[in-house]
Image (cartoon, rainbow, N blue to C red):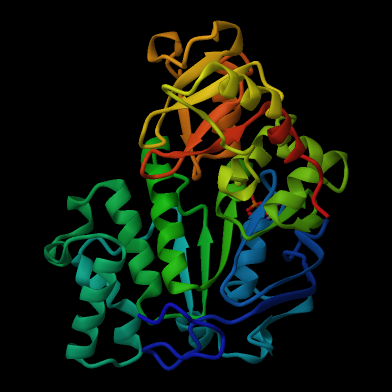
Length: 385
Ligand SMILES: Nc1ncnc2c1ncn2[C@@H]1O[C@H](COP(=O)(O)OP(=O)(O)OP(=O)(O)O)[C@@H](O)[C@H]1O
């Protein structure tokens, strides 16, 4: 599959593989309801991005989603998919172009997995060969063995059924996917696994996705952009996860994202995103004066010591340099090391666990990459821009 999918390219179905979506002053009032479920909701999702709708129960997330594929109709405003109003489209046709994944998956129990995945291709009149090839491709894409196609939903685990739900929604390569609390019914460990798998999959398929959750941590993890909604179906803030955590628009958003928003921001960045402290280190056998001079240059009272292969072996308090060359016996072993892909949040816990001493960061091959201090991590928490 083409990894450069954009709104301009076409998938196997002939539809664009991803399309932009825009809510324009959308309003929805259910018949007989005293107040609107959605009021003046406007935001735009660029093609190929995940937009997460998040907010407390009853704030209108599911309603917003169902307006997109016309399971319910707009009261006011408009929704544009690929620049075309959904109101101008035939609902049945529109739904074939929009993948839909829901919490309870909704697989047909008396149909095999393959038949379930083939639901939309069948409606579109694809021939047997094309459908079979697509089923194999999708099972592989979502990480299920091809033999599973012959099984029934009741013979699968919850996580496996969820993967089938995603495969079924992707069958006709829709330019937009709607996912309503897709991992809500899954236990926390499998949920995390499915989230990670889905993010990996999305890097490949680059669909436009609207994803509903009431869990702010899931929103921060999954979203390129997050729409925080509040009671009455109003938009409280529309921002990237980092902007949302760094600069919540008001008290409601601040309390919704949580008092630990600083720590949450740290999960969004990796050590690779910041400049590490220069990794100059002492070597076993260096003479004491050279080691002392290095410590002075680095303004530290503790040197990192590396072996002949530049792999860190520990720290050496400068006071232990008694005129003798640096010796392995004086070196204190490292409590922990980090890698460039370590999140700033994990780096912070390692620094704190080691008495706030700068943390040693190593390359994949074990060589010293540099150090990260508490100050560097807190600098990273300054608001963007
Ligand atoms: N079919 C309906 N008829 C009348 N009112 C409805 C209908 N569906 C939803 N509502 C009302 O619209 C409002 C928004 O509901 P919606 O299900 O969109 O919220 P939600 O944010 O998805 O909530 P949750 O997180 O609990 O699923 C609520 O006040 C709800 O009671």
